[in-house]
Image (cartoon, rainbow, N blue to C red; front, side, top):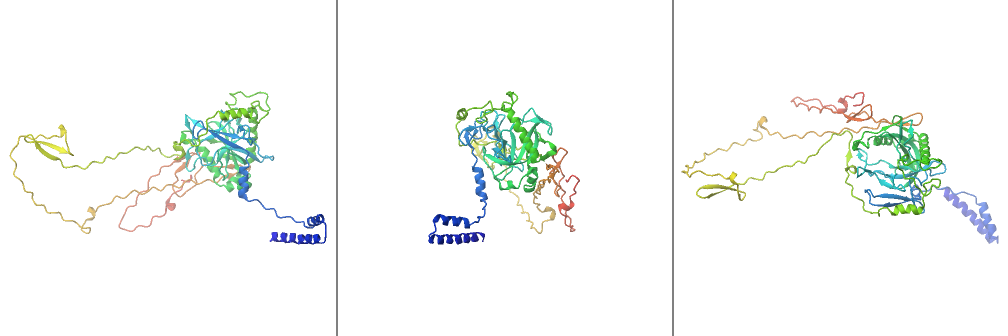
Length: 520
């Protein structure tokens, strides 16, 4: 309706302009008349969200060049800038993506739902993305039930570094010598090597084998939901259960490898956005010291853990190289093989259940006896008897030597045997009835533990407790003081005794199950 009004208004003034031309009015004056008398503004139309989101993803000025064979040690994924020059995703990509410091560049290492542990290499020149190797085998993260692979797009912030010589007071542990890890919780799955712009929401302080390993919670700005998420408390509001799943994932993901569960600082709390930005700025300062910016004293190879610090764009760094030198590193790598190597590690396909009993499967061989055949008796050599079975003569152990031939015994006529009477179903006594075997009752799996609602603190942090909720079913686990799940064994329920008298209907399990104070 509004557009029709604007269109009619415009046509009205257009008719006046035509009349003015017929009255020999100068065309310039007619145009001036049209523009001065027709003053209206067309309504601003919002772009279609689908195309706007695609444009945000496709406008990234970075590209990738894979080398080697995927799922092997020679696989490397190099990043390139808008000019096609090889760069370091660790050092050449700016940390901040916008002038208002509201969005940051994130290098995606592992796409969501995948298992291959890909990461920015610290020891390779130009820091390409490679697959981690542990004890000579390509590393995959396990599917810890109910999670499949990584549950977010996982990656790192460029130009950040967790200094292994700095102990954080909140964790009482030093840095892990890696870039700052990021979990993109958006609904958009992007491939490895993508550089996306994210909004920071919060952070989790994980303690991995005695080292501080920060996990930033962020969301891709191309996700329409990003405009509604501004802090970590909004995550629980619009994506309930995701923070609990994140804490659970990081706690148990190394248990299938025989390692203990990971711990967390700040009493398992997700710290808010303000605190996360402080950690980002702190690690960015550590990175500057790493590559020699603003510091007269260079860090030794031992101090930086053998990190390759060369780049093509950080002019202040003493480790600056030319784009031609960077291309030489790429060309020196193995040629790209588009056919990935087969994945034989069961971690990529099977599920691992925490606290499940160890089951050893043994191959059971069932021997089936061949049907016996009547032996063929043949008389040879004056009365010797040889048994021939299955068409072949037995060995000496199976031969039967007959004694001297004697008189044949008189034939004995068999006595007639009367057939036994067949009992009908009605004549069969109850004690003689054939009882069919009853299969065991199926075991009803216990309901999975429900998510304990996150508690929002006054300072904006979100505290998550890894405890199962109370359930009417017998829960499979009890949470001890350390937050670990412990299997509780319960006796099988006794079967009711049948009687001739009618019994009252057994009440439902939810009515007869006792609930202890711990929810079990």
